[in-house]
Image (cartoon, rainbow, N blue to C red; front, side, top):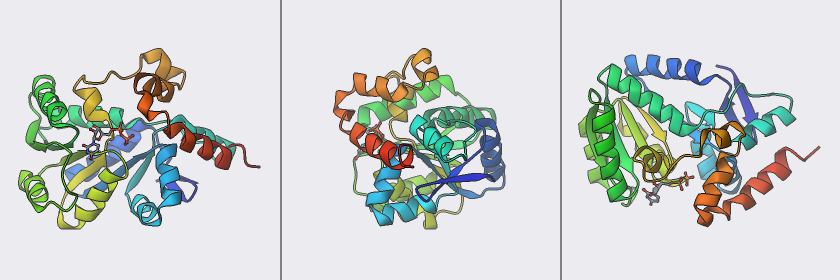
Length: 238
Ligand code: UDP
């Protein structure tokens, strides 16, 4: 599969549908797959934290989720085909699971968000099998959680603990699983449960989804610093 490196992180250079077909092929083969959806903040974190960098580099697919990643790739004359937002990957996987009666586990977000998500999934994807669910406030080495996920025999394990926590959890427990798609999905449970609204289509089209999130959740504003650093290092650097 075609990849483009940005700050030593190998991004997948595929259209969303083609990437999904590869992933579904893996699901049918009962493969184990680790997916990271990375934005500039995640790339900056890999610069600051070697262990985290190795974890992200070990993923089967690092997906470009963030316009900054696309701009950096273009600047380096190795343009990426398209931005692939993690929340859209998750929604496509939910539809696939619904259509093919696959099992999903939902790990993360606040308890009430997690429960609202499960209600929503039940309604919107009635044939998807909910293997289990748990909120995201626990110790990363909590064995009971891992056992619960294992017991579900899930084909898809969605992990919404924010970065780097979600990738750290997946990395720590991945070896003890035999199959499943493991994907860190950040704030996607908040969006799919209708707790937080995704930006209106026009903002997404104009590549301003990141700005919309800051306007709606000003506590995220400090993240802009990392994005600015990323831009300085990758886009403005000669
Ligand atoms: N979260 C969690 N456990 C934690 C910290 C965060 O379950 O210890 C959840 C939080 O409730 C939210 C998601 O992880 O649902 C993080 O969302 P955000 O949009 O901040 O994702 P990020 O951009 O940090 O990956």
